[in-house]
Length: 237
Length: 237
DNA sequence: TAGTGGTCTAGACCACGGG
DNA sequence: CCGTGGTCTAGACCACTAA
Image 1 (tube, each protein chain N blue to C red):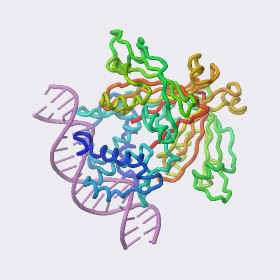
Image 2: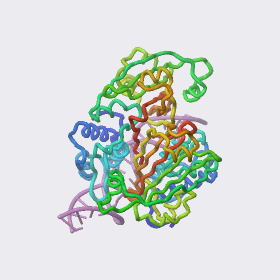
Image 3: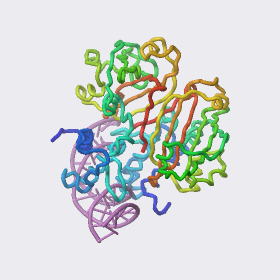
Image 4: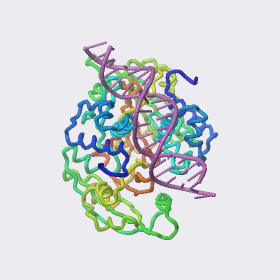
């Protein structure tokens, strides 16, 4: 009854994720066995297993064959767990993330952007949002996001928080899959100013091409961050 | 009959992967439907789906609801698909990767390394292998790998190819899960020389803490690469 | 409407860990 | 030995795409 059309395994995964982040299921704790969850939820074991697989992939749960499933120790959790989740991940580390909107404008898409968004040559512009993200008063990164006109209302949204949350709550869209690339770029004048580094400094550049869970292109994101001050960690499995 | 204890879904995934890399299933081509594969292989649809999920995760296949499953276009494939797979991924792009062993030595582990490998304070040394990897005569990265004494025979192996292959063939161990981190470091004298860049140049640093499929710590790898010349791409799903 | 992939079930047997 | 997670099956119904 939580919702109508979201799959059962997503609902169960969301529920467990919430209980983990609440502290109800603390790190190191063994969670109920698949059989238990099957019985208490009424879902089949396959469905339960699919839920757990999601959380294992996110690094929140660890399975041990023959023993059970455990909440991953905080120390070995990925710092950044999924797309656009800077906000919550920073919060979990007990640090504060503030966001300042630097610029919002409509731009003519590049060829690469046109391809990704499957735009005709109709000259449809893209919404470009540039924000500065600051951790504990230290500038972390300059993030630029591009959206299609479909998301025009974002222009008037409160962008000083988590874009991820806005997308979920106002559009019922969850970033699902995507392509992420890492490279090095050098600080432009604006980036140097915002990040408080010399112009031309080496920055880590992370580009995301993100699809929503409906399979359609959602947005493009480009972050440039001070790679000397931060590490970007991902868990693979 | 392909093998005895490897799961059916792995066997099917391996088979399809081989057919894709052979060119038998070219990029863009639609592969047989899940129902077809179920009938021709005799495996259940769930098992077939699990195989496909693996290849989708690796970026080799793309599913489209209502249409079918297709071999991913080469242009949108991840450059580096899994741990230690530089060799095969470069090969797929039609480029040649050569490797030169720079240094092999036994070193005293750092605290971080001791923790990962679960070493006692017995002073057990680690095998450190440093190699230069060159793509089409352009130096790509300096890779340093650390192993426990268990892998001492590596010292006398042919290290000018794929470490990944040696581990699979001689130790029957497959890199499975791990933690990867991205940051920026600056070229040391040796790195500058090997990569043909000025000393102090910004390099992309990728650290891997890799576990084998038996769940035990396998090795640590550190790569520093010319982030101005290459992008490191990962597919998320 | 026919064919595709997406979700879900109920049940079976195996492999591993620890008493 | 028991309880855990890992693999696998046979079948059902739904949602999407395209003719």
